[in-house]
Length: 193
Image (cartoon, rainbow, N blue to C red; front, side, top):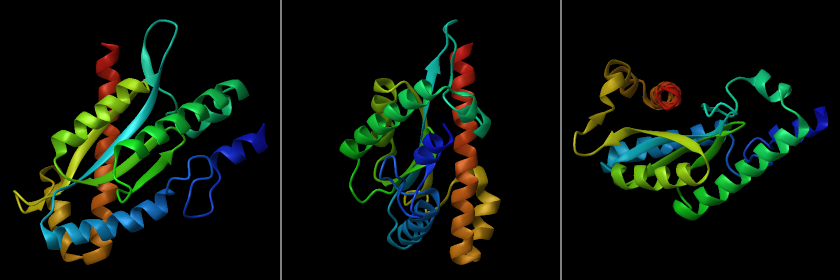
């Protein structure tokens, strides 16, 4: 069982072995560069998260994995089922988004995407994938040329981070990932009520 788990979460430092997607560290490196480029070019750029869900026997919806210990408590059959879903959603993401858009498997059953373009269109595409794969999703603007400033929700951090260059942009991404995680948890709570 332990070697099975190891194979499901292993990577070579750049690519995840199960999906072939970027690892979180490679994603953050690329995303930091992309955010810097978007600042200079004025292009709209957004960050999204998509998380797999399950519905229990009582009809309550919850995230497939919320903590690392959740993985260890699952049977091998459950892990195979989840891994299959992870691979299926990976294929959908690859078909739907541009090859150049950075995508990573963030945790065992969560994905992060950085993308340019109209946020409304991106949200619609992600909603379609989420519906097809029983998942929840959230998107946040990182840089939008219309406002010519960073995301309003973490404005103080962003203004300071812009002054700090590359490390600052990295911090902006980390901050916004935390905001997305909170939004996902809120979505799951709403679905239960």
